[in-house]
Image 1 (cartoon, helix red, strand yellow):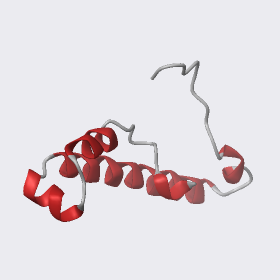
Image 2 (tube, one colour; image 1 turned 180 degrees about the vertical axis):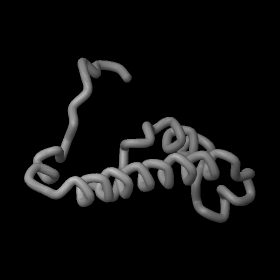
Image 3 (cartoon, helix red, strand yellow; image 1 turned 90 degrees about the vertical axis):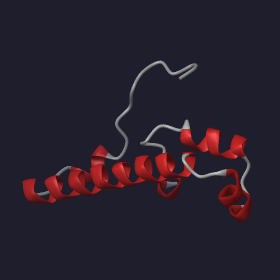
Image 4 (cartoon, helix red, strand yellow; image 1 turned 60 degrees about the vertical axis):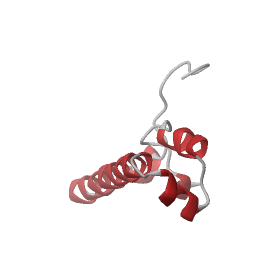
Length: 77
């Protein structure tokens, strides 16, 4: 990505002081969410023009969304 200098881990402070099983569950939930986002974006990119029209999306909208990284979660903001 343009302008990206490095990688930052966000939210690691939330896991400090927790039991290992809780941390493992939180990591598992996050990995599952990332998989869901990746799968949804992949399926969106496979839709035909008629389905996109029904959703009110253009091919450009779909390309923009499908190029987002899997960790870019719109619900986490």
